[in-house]
Image (cartoon, rainbow, N blue to C red; front, top):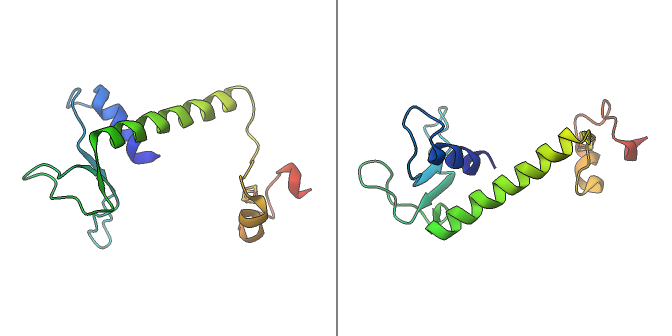
Length: 112
Ligand code: SF4
């Protein structure tokens, strides 16, 4: 959710650049200079973002949908936190908790 949320806030103007359209959001991995994970609207922007590969490319509608869904999920999470629902509730505990490195410290009720 990180990239769509950053894209959303950048588009609204939460930076010194002011508001504007976000045409792509990619992780930049300094270790190997990789910049392939993320999304790029249609074919990118000449001189800024190269043509998107098939894993990155999204339409404007897809980008907007991704941002809208991310904002919705974030809103739900913040609402739950403000309501005091902070406990871990993994969706599939039978899968994730078995190998979780935090299992020994975790206070999730389903483990005790
Ligand atoms: S053991 Fe706890 S922290 Fe780890 S996945 Fe399960 S609920 Fe989450």
